[in-house]
Image 1 (cartoon, rainbow, N blue to C red):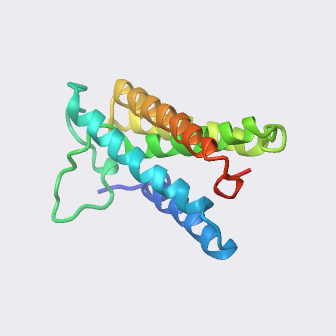
Image 2 (cartoon, rainbow, N blue to C red):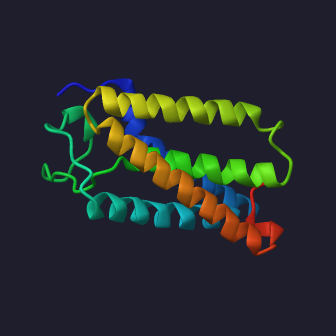
Length: 165
């Protein structure tokens, strides 16, 4: 079984993102990170339900690189890439909040980094036959749409303490 550095990094992307927002909320004693994590968990559920509700198709043979950590070689039942959905959700959620409050120019390095990360993650998943281009695109759309919905809902609360800005 051959793993490369990116497959290792790819496996830890969700853990890194969740840890960042959780630690930010703990250190700053606010609910901003908890709100993002709650949105992430709902996004993951929506992505799983979407993938299992429609005939999206699956990759023909799962590559060992795609599942770096397994429990008793249990195959995954997820038909859409969760990492792509998580990255798109976080990107669109934070981008829409920044756009609403006029902080887009300040966040240009973040925007460039996230776009490169989403593209490289998606291409890696497709290139290594983890998921098809169709599955990756649908997962990105689910993350984007739910990220927009979540930012709209949180913004409508008019509670500035819940928003990253």
